[in-house]
Length: 622
Image: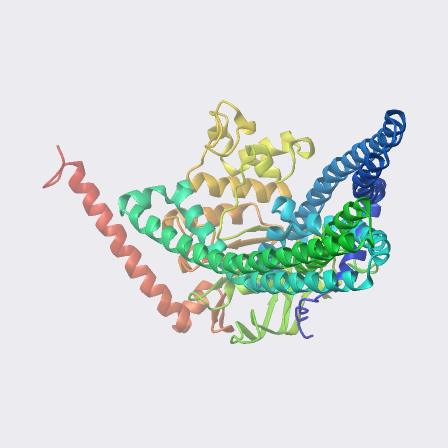
């Protein structure tokens, strides 16, 4: 079966993203609509009252109105304006709080999606790029796509309503004024649009620089790298590297800001032309007697307000286009193709002994690269313990990733108890495996939670103790102040960090606690010496008697206890059999085993010689 190709990023339209966002608001924050409607109404009423207030005041003064009439008319208008401003401000603040909560809602969705999306997507460079852009688009405060699009949509409604009201007022003066002001605003629109599109086109470059910078900073801050950084004098190198990346970021940021500076210059020029022309025309009308002084005040306020409404409409469209690009980034990650959970998935055979079959499996990590596995066939019997061995890059870890369902083969299929693994749900499939991978995963939870890999309230503490005892680690853990509740990080008080061998025992306890029917060890002991590795593998073997087990190691002696050893080369099985059978054949396995044996014998001999000298022989230390 062909592996499903990742769908290209769908560029959703502004209307589509607005509908998507409004649908989410309706489901999660319905009160936000109330504040939005209030803000729209009073944000139009407030400036309208503002331009009529000076007109009425001038006309009252020109007509010689009495103090009572002035107080009644201006006082009433002033109170209405004050109430409008108060309600508009209340709606604006309430809406802002809910919008922030909406942004948090999207950040949580992205985080949850990163935890549950297909492993192949989050491990790929494309998936990581999409996640970085989505997090950036949702996590930059008031500039996030969610905030900007919602604010822009509200501003669009407000300014369209204001445009219609002010157009009706200005049209009584001359229709040409409306056309003139609209043309100037369009010039501003295209200028801003140019700068925003340039900024968006540089987002990938920006994200790449940011990822490099974060990696350098993470490396410098990580405690496990601290010894090497000091011992090898890497401080100046890392600082220079950071400075170089920061300079790249600053140069890119400068190019973007230069575009927006040009936009500001265009806006200043059009503003000067607008106000100058409006003053000249209105003064001409007053001199000719076609309008009164009160009308002059009203029309000039309307011209200024009209231009603001037109500019704000254009600005709202610009902001919506900009926010639309960010919303596409968010949705691109949320909508990545995923393995669908069907209603008729088969039941995972928990409690049964497991057999595994790879049938004509061909797999590569991308279309451009050579296959890691080619027409790969492998049968693992019920309860059988096999070892996958071979040089680095032979395809051993890829076999494990395919078996666990992290990736799908381009061709062929993988069966568990004669059922294609694609017919099992992802979580049900993962329940079949107790796996220990090359990168040891010990999160900063307490010991018990690290054994159960569950929150404390969902953890059986008696079972944790039992598993730690079987793994030979409980006596050591009990010496710490917190015991099984001690946090596994030095970043907090009373936190602990285990040695390499103790970490292996913790992982053994974790596998015991899960008690899954398939055990996988993918070179988790590569950092240990050969003797310690061999002991670790044999300890795992001791409690896996009723399980199907797959062991991976580049040290061949560590897997001699297995029922069968499978030697991989260039994605194919070139030898298979017990250790004794493969040694009798004298082929690839035997040759590699002899090379490793000579190396380890030499290494052990040198250590024994050094030990004897240090104990009192010639050249012994006093």
